Length: 285
Image (spheres, rainbow, N blue to C red):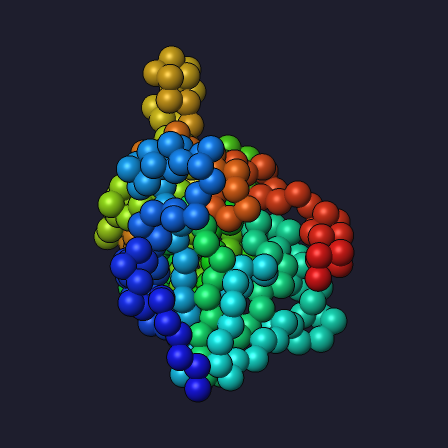
């Protein structure tokens, strides 16, 4: 039995959200800041730039997390690589190369706690049951999920959406039952959620951080003609059609965060290449 003190009863640590096995905690102030940077830390705290962590509470179940995201483990908890054989290893490398996620996602199971590393990103807990057939993510948003969640790579249905949409050729799609945790560049209060029923939404830039896999994603001219679209200053827009949901981070000029986790400016292939992913997987294992 493990008794954890100064976490659940710490006045400086506030629980923001709890869903499934995941609890999101936020450090209200950086109490160990260097005196030289105290003024920076003060204004960061005032502007809601705070460290946040995810605690996974396991009771005979299991979770999958991004590689390197674990900070500490307490209790009778075991970790496995989540890879079954050489084929699974190579398959995960390909998935990681094209989706911007880590090739290996460790799986923790048992009875106890798993705390993830702090991040300045905003943490969102999403129940996949509300996303229908699945939820497609922008590159780098995935942080953790319950082991019941299924992962697959989805590709663009046409060349235009891949080359002009800014979302890349491939994205990670989560489906099934369970809860996942995403690292968002903006807080939930700044996210706009669209619910479509046989309709469409047009977005100028890759500000959609997640959308239903049931939606058709294409890139089209903003106006009726190419010249008109160019003169309007809009050019091409991302178009989502059908029935489903979209989460849009409207307060950022596209997805420009460059941290280890969270959305990144994507290339046409949504990755640094399979060869680069293979190298990183081997030397960072």
